[in-house]
Length: 105
Image (cartoon, rainbow, N blue to C red):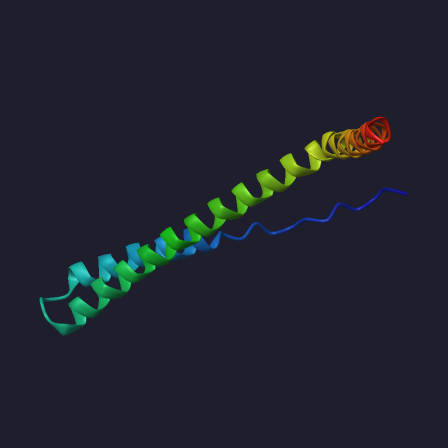
């Protein structure tokens, strides 16, 4: 029996929707005579542009956080080795300190 593949409909990203909306508002504003309606459409277009930039910044920050998390995950074995070595050094210094105290006594 053949397996049916799921077909996912590709939807535009938030950024693409915002930019399309901003362009549409600019086009509509260009067809209007100067006045409050044109000003309102241009203001909404600027707001949509700003929102798309904020979306870009948020996505970039998420990518950086993901990269940092991946790096931390990759470095975990080295942290374990470092911690084990630190514990061994602490034990060594303790024994050395105890031996020095015994020599002084």
